[in-house]
Length: 271
Image 1 (cartoon, helix red, strand yellow):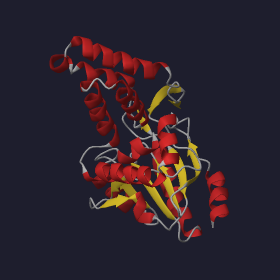
Image 2 (cartoon, one colour):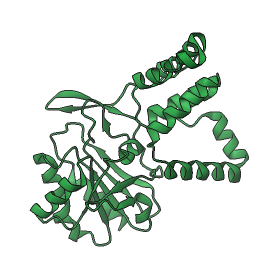
Image 3 (spheres, one colour):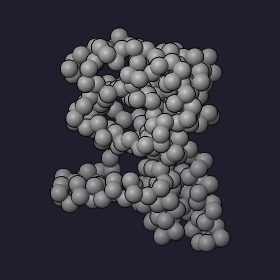
Image 4 (cartoon, helix red, strand yellow):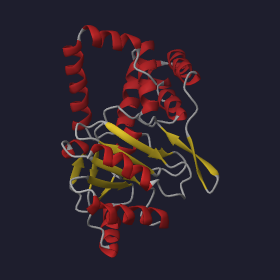
């Protein structure tokens, strides 16, 4: 999903105004208790209620990018039948279908060869990484922006209760001393208390092990939620000191570990 041409043109014409609007939008998202997917679904409903075709198109695209499944868009709108009537509801759903007809096929990953579906869009190398909020074993919140000024490695795993995820996290913990000044974050949807027990059991203290269980904030920001499991896909990202993505690996077969040597090469270029 690219940036709409109208928005791009306005940003070129009024850069300061559009930057401030983007900053306001980010602040609003951070100050409410909803995740990005939920916010975009709410806005989709509001646009449909106002019979705003452009708004429905925009927020349908944004909701998909934030990890909403196509059927969730339809289900959100069908709830409006009693409020705005069948005809207006049907019109809004057809506008959503317009968007779905032009969306690329969801990315597939596999588990022992069986396909799984990833929701949302994964940001590209060179893009600025979206902020997200996760918590540690004491439920203390951490945001990506808390690490601005440092190189960050983001390592996502489905569950620390599984062997490959444990191997991945322990490998990063062992390698952490080779990259002083680099923050390594392991993120999963495990409960913080389970993560804390894992860290104590395996003496994991060189990386931060963090949970995205509250809002799925990281999952939606990086397009890593597995539709069938509601767990994170296995991936590795490098974020530079200014917050830009410099490396990414989505592990397509979930039982495999990441390419550690390729990651080391990417880090060496930034150090």
